[in-house]
Length: 348
Image (cartoon, rainbow, N blue to C red; front, top):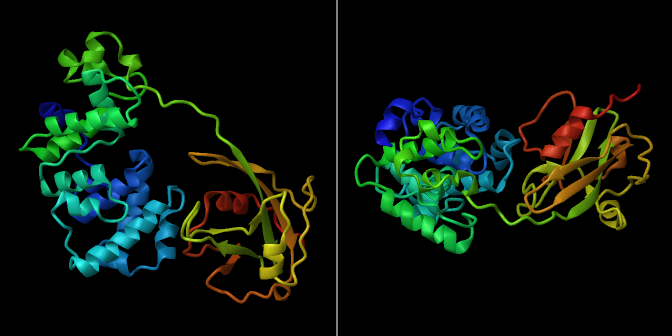
């Protein structure tokens, strides 16, 4: 595989250029549950804005989330910011060279810690991302869903066993590249694979059975009404969400559950008249659905025209009048960006 990586692997990814612990760490966090082609432009913008870990540590969380908007799984960005502050203050801007210490930092799990140590320090440390899981399950014909407890334990044992003492960085990048470009989920290019002569799944003609499928379950549907308060200055009112939960620390429209009353918003935004119609009168915005890993969110937008002085906002750290004619450096929830894009022009 090392020979294959030298000639066929990827060598020009942005984070492979000067693979410092900081650059590798940011890339590994972004690559969690996100494809390389999607990550590259985000990574380049992020590193241009925050070329050093101290710069990231000093940044406002809204700036970090603004650059992260669209990547999803925003807890990754919040943990990135927290860990940057910890390393800057407690470790004097130097990444710990211990996998155990790295794993103890916010947002850094066992595989990410191993990747940082292997790719930027060339330390013998195993990783087990999605690509590596796929290669190992096929090579050894490991049955079961890879994230099931016993199956994952076995895969970690194999990952530790296969990780060499030398050329760790090349091996680590190589096995990830093999899974990403050859041993793919569908239509794997087995003929191009350097492991073909010893791959148990290929030799038994059972490639399609590995990895095992995740047990299916139907996703519940939750419904909310999002109020889009638009004033005479072409601004919309956004609410900063709590740090925990979905879209943590991002800005979104005030929302309520249709079956509940509007007491919370009425109390916090005195003077604003709320109404909601099942036919969505007064708005050309269509309902939309946003999928999370554990549920689907059905969103019914309701546009309400108000005068800015009707809304008495006392907590400016929570509420924001967002201009429609230019963007601000704040993180916006994905549905908010969609709704703003489709928001019809106000009639004069």
